[in-house]
Image 1: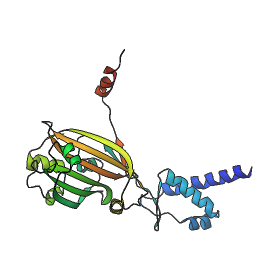
Image 2: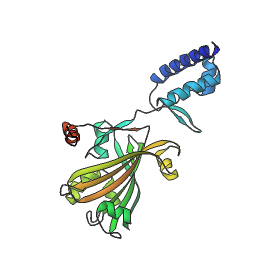
Image 3: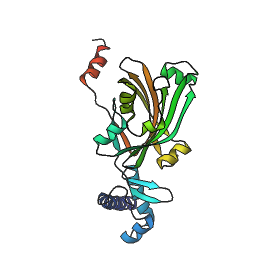
Image 4: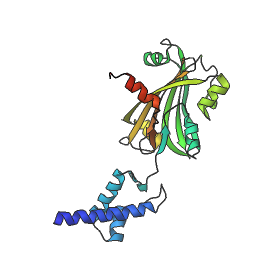
Length: 248
């Protein structure tokens, strides 16, 4: 009986907090556990449980040493041959990038295999912090054979890379494949994304080929798990391909 009453009270506080969150703009800071307890006449533990519940639902974002904030809605990404710049613009957001690292280096064995080149061949490697409306969304590292993009500089990366490839190097992308898995960020990446190292991230490893099926680039992108979603559209061809492999 006591447990039931306690659960009902907690649920009532969760409901009240949910209404409060719904009236606030994303990024707004909510009152602390102590303030909620004092303002609503409840136990601090009850306020904590309510905050934890909404954090688990993705409605709140707890930042260590800073407070609890109304979470931003995740930005959805449609898998396919569209750039980050185009993805953000389609959603009415202002895309941005900041180059964190840019260098020409010899390809190691793994990179050479992905790019269909010899180990030791020169590749251009660059890492960018990807932004949407000025907020950090992802850290992306890209490798490209140097002979494919002769003279590429960090200044060429201020806008859409796909557009730069088309205009400056006459490269038309024709195929992309991806591998997606959950992961955690290392310390440096977490700092760039404004998260702690226990924050879940989504890693997407992409392989790009041009219209002649030459390997053009490979990229690994680490997205904030609370700010990014994947949206996949399956066409009838996908179901046809699946069914054609089955015996009837």
